[in-house]
Amino acid sequence: PVFSVESALVDGNTRTIEGTFEIPNYLDNDGSPGGRLSLDDQGLPVVNPLHPTYNARFHCVVPDAVTEPVPTVVYGHGLMGDRTQVDFFGTFAAGGTLAACATDWLGMSSEDVANLAGILGDMGRFGEQADRMLAGQLAFQLLGHLVNGGFDANPAFQTSDGRPILREDGAVFVGNSQGGILDRK
Image 1 (cartoon, rainbow, N blue to C red):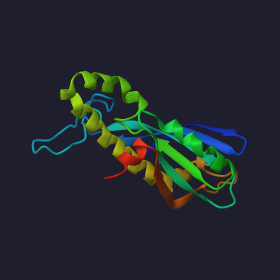
Image 2: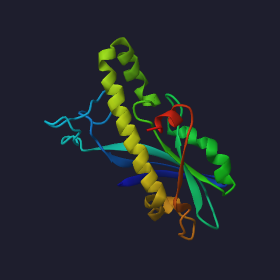
Image 3: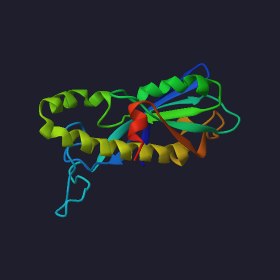
Image 4: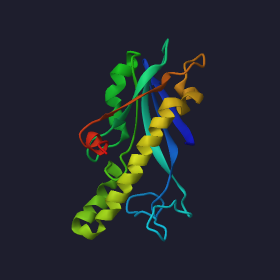
């Protein structure tokens, strides 16, 4: 996926990287809370022609320097949380043994709270939450692809001498609470 790094801040031995990556938008709005699946005549999901992509956000904590690329946790946050909960892994990143990246579980993240409150008042709108959760699943799949070999081309994910920090194909998923439940397919 196409991605951009917005910031890479070093604090001691840890680098915190923020950015966005594009995911296909199968919702009938711009991808924000409240959208429903955009369906074709056969009832199959299609990419929204007016808003074909959605910029999902990522947040990573990585070692600032390593001798060898490290494995990376793709972290699923808890109920109504957000991607920054991955900061829990900062100690491991500072020790040079592990990196961790996360995105928001679209449909079940902090940015969905207001829409979910409205849904609780009108359960006929439940599809808005369920459909956006599918976008969240897609976001995590694509973040895994970036961790496994896309991010390494960007200097933010490299050592000072240009070597990759993340081990290619070294991603594992770890989910906390709701993040673990959503991974069960």
